[in-house]
Amino acid sequence: MQRRNFIKQICKASLVCAAPASIATLQSCTDNDDSDSGANPNLPIVEISIDINDSVYAPLKTVGQSVVTGSLDFDRSGLLLFRESNEKLRAYSRKCPHAGTSINAFVNGAATCPNHGAKFNTDGSSISGGPTNTPLNQYSVDLNGSIATIYK
Image (cartoon, rainbow, N blue to C red; front, side, top):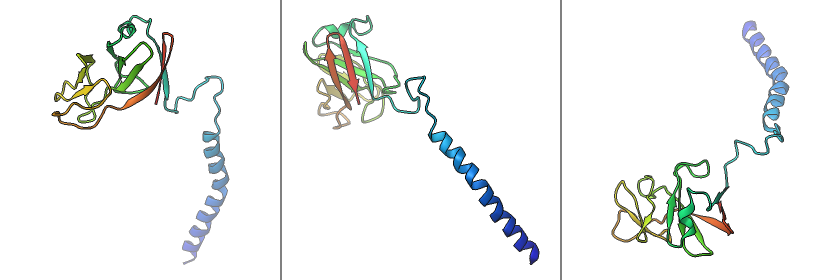
């Protein structure tokens, strides 16, 4: 019986001694300020800027044109961009709300999911008759000259 009491006392003493060091270690992880980098890689990216003068986005200079991107840190499915007017650019996630497949660019006013044929209007709403009624996830866009800033 004395052996059990001895082991209990040693365990309690070990916990009391180790607790301050454990707390200090955990606090040092959360208090780490990497101010030299200018950005915390653990934070989600909530905005992205594109220049429509860049050749990749050049079709967006013309009203009614569309461009898709590949996977980005901003949106892993990529972006579906549509030039609605001289003053307005729309941005959507390419992730199909039905199957998660990357949606194609707009052609004749509709973007299509290559996986199952769901179609979406340029306002992001689904076209009736497809396998989904859920609209595309839309992002806010500020257009300033040739720079489009897209926000979550």
